[in-house]
Length: 168
Image (cartoon, rainbow, N blue to C red):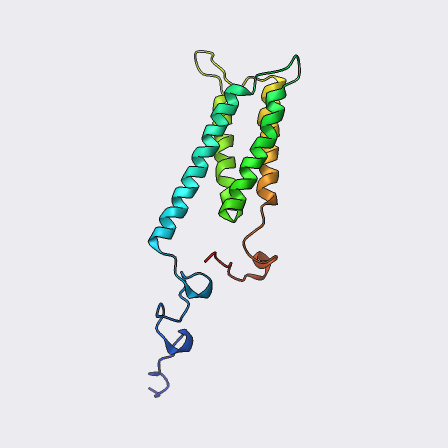
């Protein structure tokens, strides 16, 4: 055995053990600051609240979308930009596309469930012009809103393979 075989190589920055003060840990954010359990709890609660918002918006909108002015589905036309605004503001508030996707997906699930016919024949979102404007228009608006939320990292990082920066 050579004496080089016994040599240990430190992979830590500045010869500090991983996680020590001054070194950036793998779970740490920008500047070496690790995310605390409280930060994770608050972030999880925010995503849950956004999911609840999307679900409530989907349920309330499903019952309101049928209101019309003559043959014009006014409420459905008004609800589509509101779905866009809800999704875009959620993404802006959370600082990423996942924050926008959570209420959009929950909204979509709630609306699809409300458009299914029950065994008794009840139907909340019927296959009328107002229903289609609300479902299809809302899904298109939510998709555009999620796509328009800026990613938290530099452009092209997915292509170059660099790790994403975190908020901190």
